[in-house]
Image 1 (cartoon, one colour):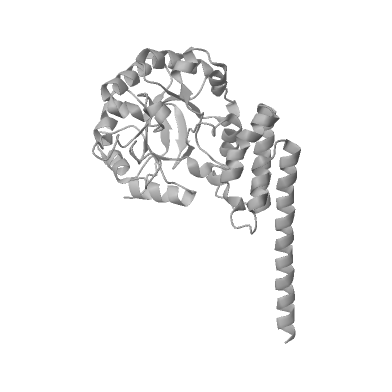
Image 2: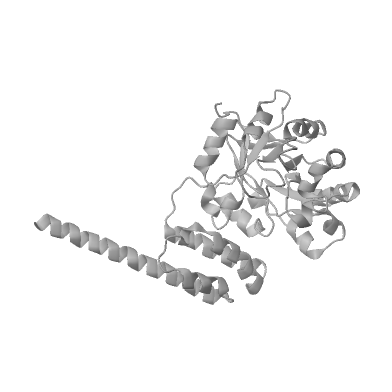
Length: 342
């Protein structure tokens, strides 16, 4: 299959050709991280997922997740829940926050969500999933989209028929994670069923593929192979907001970006929680991989409790690595000069 060349739209939101989206992720896709991913080329970003029940109870920490900026548009707010009335009421609250679309999470596999019948738990109650979807679509004027999985387990791979049912409810795009709920995040994502949904002549809404995409090259391959309208990247973005850019950045530039993320988080929340919020990215970023004898430095970095201390550690890493690079370059230069004198 060849990749699509037409621009992609969700409602009135235009994305252009082959857009790559940032997946909604709890404790990851806060506004600071979204803004950086947008800067480096993410065509669409999403908030952390929002509990419908907590939203209608006016829980402060949940309400704060609705904060969005015009600079990050287009941006979607994703909600999850198992109660029809709560999901409808939450969608109305979300609409007032002014996102470009509302996404319904029927894919989160974690026990505290799916085990209570929400998220991927809805894959065991398709009638209720469809009822929630239909009533939310009817309740708001914004485009409504859905994110889900292939099925509950490999004995219940229902996504091909489910996609048509969700489309009939009036959603304007469908994101499919290429795993079942029982897989959680283990094993390999299976894109064959995602491609099958996209090839279904009865499907006319955009299909967004998700799962095991670690680079733009892999996204390009997914476009070419499965014909999806967009690709969504999740866990591979941890510590890598530049993943959406085709520009090659060096170590210093990437470290600058992580330091900027730290400053954004500290300014947005406070020093203690801002550092905690940044640690996930510092722990996951690949830029420190391969640095010899790095274990103690990593431990110190992840234990730092003040921004000056953490910035000092990062600066030490920068200087030590620069020193090693310069030393290596000098040795190589002297070696070349010696060779030329033979």
